[in-house]
Length: 420
Image (tube, rainbow, N blue to C red):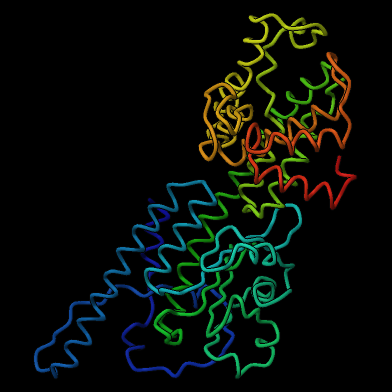
């Protein structure tokens, strides 16, 4: 509540001073505390004696800005009640687009490992272009904005040679605003808007409004990033347990790592969003965590399992879900773990779901898990070998396995046989 109150107190700016038209131009403005305020709602106005057309114009402006204020309240409530980067990014984009109505909106954040700017939200960008949006700081328009913590506004690319050279026409066709998402300590990302659906240029009022939103959005995003760091600490603890589980059996010592490697490769080949790939990575590391409650005499048995023993084995996805779902931030991963032994034809376990009802992440894990099991020796059988395992995936496509996941994995293996 304190943050939201501060947010609203900071809604200052010169709306009335900006009622006169300002000529649109290509310009670069430095982001500073004095230059990031959002204008307040219009005060009560005395309209008596004004010309009818002026009255209409002022009333329309008043309605517009009161609507903006309502959106600001909603965005503040949504952002500061969530610790999910995805949810916060979605809230930012929805608020911005209700006001600006742009064809393209992208939010890029600094990756915690590579330091590159990667997309966490995209709208109006073809899926095959999303991966190309990863940039080093200083690279391209977004990288320039992030490196210098400055806003770029352009309403006519023909007037600026540098911007025209840096521009990717798939993203910015007519006009753009690129605004840094920054805290007091550093720049953590960039908010991009381009191609207003009205065909009109970005006005100075709109740019100032967006800067204010970006300032407050940066606080919420930074809080979510810090929360993710705490999540990672918990995840590392659970992953240690998973590795300890693998170590119980010399045949499966690296199984969780291998499954994770394959699953991530499939997800990347399918061009899933980075956040979804990260969830799959986590689920891969933890997919067999439920086996920690299975006796060695059953788990390591070299002869045929009895019906009761096999039933016990089949409970490990449910046990794994129970363990992982104890951490709220692993909710989606827990679903993948529960369903990584489901089959595309509905004959899997524990729930017997089929086809598109199986989460894409779980379907990917099923392919990765089965492949690793086939190419490695197990206590109850010898490895099939690489080619035989690939043939098994092909023959069971659309039966046991999701066909899209199988095709993607076979493409990956053809391009990089050393992945196995």
